[in-house]
Amino acid sequence: MDAKIANASLAYARALERLGQGGGTASSGASGGPSFAELVREAGAGAMESARSSEALSLKSLSAVKPELTEIVAAVTNAEVAVETVTAIRDRVIGAYQEIMRMPI
Image 1: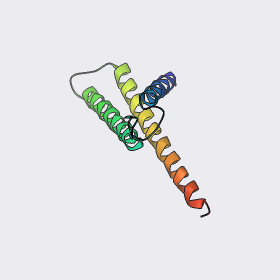
Image 2: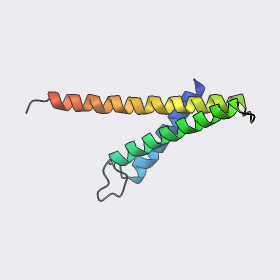
Image 3: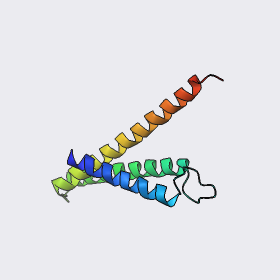
Image 4: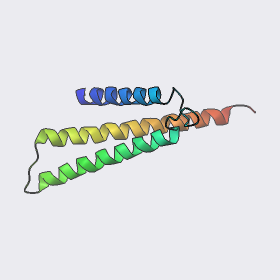
């Protein structure tokens, strides 16, 4: 549970840094910050990289080269947090879309 809190706080800090660089907007217009699509793409790429590294460590544990158990647990936990974050973002985007669709014209 502590790893999830640490990863969440790290992700929050990175998001704040990005917002600070982008002038507080989600578009890449005149402010020069990353667009929403770029942020989502980066989050997805980070989740995939985390999953790949945890899978590689899991495969190493089956081979002759034995990594530390803590490394395996940390990698799997990081992958789990990344997947949960991507799922939460997806749910929020779908919820926002559904709310917009319910608005009267």
